[in-house]
Image (cartoon, rainbow, N blue to C red; front, side):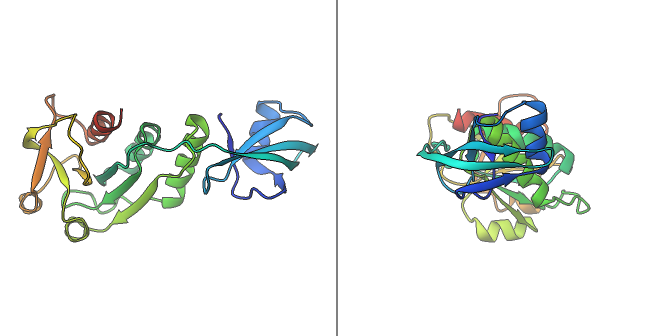
Length: 219
């Protein structure tokens, strides 16, 4: 763990619950040791001294703060047509580690409407990922209720589709990348495609495709 997340970085904070259990029962951190904390709202690392510990809580006193931004160097926006939330949750930490700045989750024509994403759960997954990889900002997430709504909001985008052009790794892509669900895109949706790219590979699962395009653009 590179740091601990805590929304409050005031002069004195109290840790309880999961954070207390992990740090003091698993990692065995002791009184007077220093703990690094980020609030994921600014670029500071806050160094706290552990003043008191009991079985349920720990009191921390701010020692110093250091400006240490650790953000993606490129803004990469991924538009991902919704698939099984379990698969999204498994893939999300990898996308976060690679530096995806924003994901728009889109209910496309072939997305199953009974799939419901829980934003609070996704945020918790991202926070845990940030603590492990050291990223200092939270990925932006939005849910778009239909492909029509997506096309209206983002007129310029790049679709990943079978009949697209080969991706050029040296080209600077500024628009969102749209990745379809397991069933692909409908013909109605393809009518809105202006720019299309493809991978020279076997047929990729949706979660493989989002990782592949993120890796090609960001790493």
